[in-house]
Image (cartoon, rainbow, N blue to C red):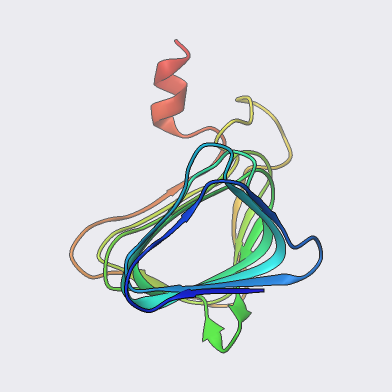
Length: 165
């Protein structure tokens, strides 16, 4: 399934369920999931020159993510892999990259670049849990933040630990 808007943004206000199929979002504007908006798919590609993706619904559930766009904020309910899909290897962004899994691992098999990078695995996993919530680098992917920091958090992030005290 492809959603394309070459002159503006896309607002997802309902659930898109591609099940074991794929989704391609292509926009030049702001792309958001609001209200009950969420995405379920085997793979998703985010593309579009200068687009700003904020897909942070807690029930998003995609297995593989790739992007070549402006900025990317993406939250997934469980395990997620950053890999190759739709001719896009990993994530290349001209803005910030912020990728989180709420539970389980975040696997990175391809390069990730942006002005700043935050990878957060198992954001809701309880402290001391032995499985899930790891950032796993498969092979030799590079993480390149051109002007900011590159931050990797494993379950739970230090910020989340402070909130629970």
